[in-house]
Length: 345
Ligand code: GDD
Image 1 (cartoon, rainbow, N blue to C red):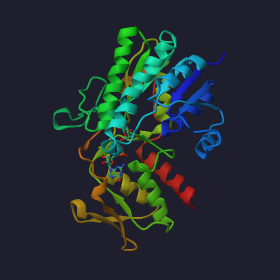
Image 2 (cartoon, helix red, strand yellow; image 1 turned 90 degrees about the vertical axis):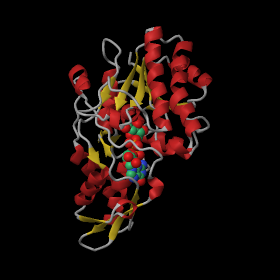
Image 3 (cartoon, protein in one colour; image 1 turned 180 degrees about the vertical axis):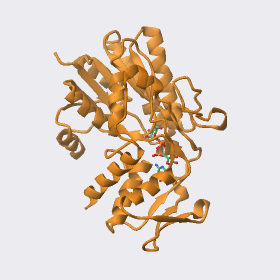
Image 4 (cartoon, protein in one colour; image 1 turned 90 degrees about the horizontal axis):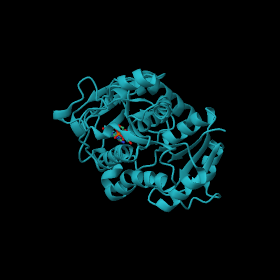
C-alpha cells in the first residue's frame, strides 16, 4: 500500500515541487485549495493540468470542519502544512488575515489531525521560516542561524510563523505527535511568484533583454538573503518527516548575498553590464552598452521594518538527514533567468 500525503497550499511554489517529489516516490498525493474553486474554475483546471497526480481537496485554512473532514476521508500518513500568506510585505497590509491563516491556520490543521484521531499515526510538517530570526544587532547570524538561535520576528508574517512554530512544538510535547518544523531560508526557482524579489528580477531582466520592458523598480537593495533552490528544499522537508525521532531542522545554504548581487548576476547572465549611480532612493543602474537606465528605486517596495541579513547554518540537516543541495547561487540565478528568457520569447 502506498503512503498518503496531504499538502496544504499545494498551489504554491513549494507545494508544486513537493507534490512532484512525493508522486515520484510513490505516494498518493492530496493537496488543498481554498474553498469555492469549483472544478470548472480556470485555476483549478490549470493545477489539474500541471499536476494530474494530485487529488485536489477544497479546504480553507480557517475552516476546521473542512480540514477535519479531509483528515477523516484521506487518513494521511504525512501532512505538510505549506498554506499561508507568505509574502512578508503583504503581511503588513493585511496583518489580521496573516494571523488567521499563517498563524492560527497551523493550529487548525493540528487540531484537525487530533479530531480525526490521527495524532499517533500521521506525521506533521510545519513550514517554519528564517523570518523568525529577524537579524537585529543583538542577534546577528555570525556563522549562521541554527535551530538554537534566538527569534525576533520583524513582520506580521514572521510573528504569525513564530506562533506556528511554537504550537507545533507544543503539540509534539503535549500529545507525543510527530510534529516538526523545517526552518527554511529563502528558496527560489522557476515556480516562484513574481511578487518575490528574485523572480521579479529574473523576469524583468529577461524582458529587458528581449526589448519587452524598459525598467525594473525595486526597494531595498542592501538586505542580504541566504538563497537556495526550492527543488532541493522539498527533498529536505521529506527527509525531516522520515527520522526515527521528531526534530526541527534549519535548511539553508550557508551563504548570504545582497539583492544588488542578485541583480548584477542576473543582468550579467544576459550579457548586460551595469554601472551604478546615485545613492539611497536616487540610486539607478544603467546598461553600460546602451546608456539606458534599467533599474531605479521605488520606495513603495520598502517595508516598515526590514530583516537586514539572513544566513543559515545547515550543519544539523546535513549531518543527521544527509541533506545536500544540487544548485548553488550562480546556478540559481542562471536557472531562473534562462527559464524567463524562454518563457518570454
Ligand atoms: N518582494 C520584494 N519586491 N522584495 C524586495 C523588493 C521588491 O521590489 N526590493 C527589495 N526587496 C527586498 C525585501 O525588502 C527583502 O529584504 C528581500 O528583497 C527579499 O524579499 P522577498 O523576495 O519578498 O522575500 P523575503 O525574504 O521577504 O521572504 C521570503 O523568504 C522567507 C524565508 O526567509 C518569503 O518566501 C517568505 O515566505 C519566507 O518565509
